[in-house]
Image (tube, rainbow, N blue to C red; front, side, top):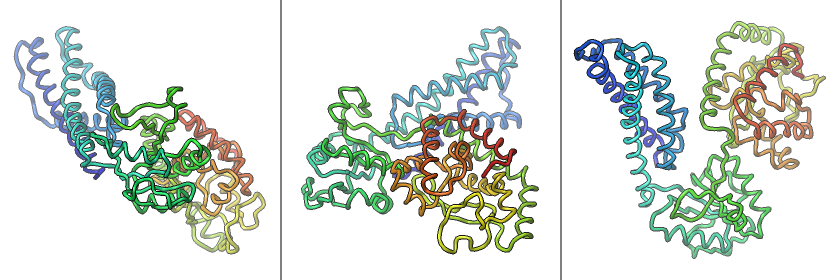
Length: 472
C-alpha cells in the first residue's frame, strides 16, 4: 500500500472541497445575503482580493485538518469517528473564519449572521466530508476484499496463535492482516502450528532485523496465558518500533472491560496504544519545535558565530562535534554539538564526562555550564531527529549497559529525544551508567505526564539553568 498516494487523495479532496465551498459561500453572500441590504444581486468579483482570500481559506482548512490528524494513519480509518471529528473540526473552523473574516460583513439584520454561519458550515462540511467518506469507504472495501493489506507478524506458536491464524484466514471480510511469518519466544521452531503455510522467521529477540527486512506494519502477540513474562518482554521490545501492536485479550481483559473492539465482525483483538498525548498536541509540539528552532538559530547567529570563532582560535580540531545517537524507535542519527573536548578525547573508547574531566577544554567547561555547546542541536530539531523537549539521546554503547540494569529504558524511545529533558533539569548530566539509570526515573515521569504545559515548564526551568550557569 502506498501511504503517500492515499494521503494525496485525502489532501486533493480537502483542497478542492474547501475551495468549492468558499466559492459557493461567496456566491450565496452576493445573491442571498447582500440583496437584503442593497436590494439587488451583486456579481461575484474574481479579483486579486478574492483570490488571496481563497488561498488563505484553503490553507487554513488544510492546517486545521492536519492538526486534527486527518492525514495520519490513512489506511486505518473509522467512518463513525471520522464523522464526529469532521463535525467538530468544521464547527471550530467556521467559528474562527467568522470572527476573522465575516464579523464585519454587510448585513441587513443580525439573522444574517446565523445564515452566514449555517451556510458556511453546510457547504464546508458537505464538500469535504463526503469526498473524504468516499475515499475511506473505497479503502475499507479494498481491505475487506484483501486488495489492501498490512504485512503482519504473529508472535507465538501455541494453540492461541493457531486459532488466531485460522480465524483471520476464515474471515469473509478481512481486517487487512496478511500473515508473512511468525516468531517464537521459547525457541521451539520445530513446532509449526500453521501447517507450513506461515514461515518461521526466528526468535522474538530478532525483532530489529526482522521488522526492517520484512517491512512489517503490524505485530499480533498471541502468547499463551502461561507466558506472562514473555508477553511483557515482547511488548517492551516492540516499543522501539513504528509498528501497530495488537494482542489477544484474556478472559480477565474481557471481564474488566479492557477490550475495545475495532471491528464488529473481526477477530477480538485489542490495540496497544503508544499515544502519549492527543494528536493535536503532537502537531502543535512539532510546529513549536520547527518555529522555535528556526528563530533560535537566526536570532542567536551572532553568538553561534562568536563561539565558533573562539573554539577555532583556542584549541585545535573541528568546531562541530559529530556523534551518532539513538533516536525515536531506535533509529540512529548524527548529533551536532559544539566541540567542548580536546581532539581524540575518546581514543581509549566511549566514556562519559565528569565535573573535573581533564578532556574538557576551558571554553568547553563554560559552554557546558551554560548549555551553549548544545546550540547546534537546533539543527537536529529542524532535520526532524530531535524535539525541543524529550529524553536526552544516548549512544548505543551506553544504551546496551542501561538496558541490562533497567530494561524499561526502551520506553524512552517512544518519543523523539530532546535538547532538554525533565531528567536533565532535575538531575543534570550523568557521569556513569548508574546515574543514567537514576535519571531515567525523571524521564519516565515526563512520559507519564507529557503535555504542552509540561514542555513549557521544562523549557522555562532550562532557561533558568542556562542563565545561572548550572548546567554541570
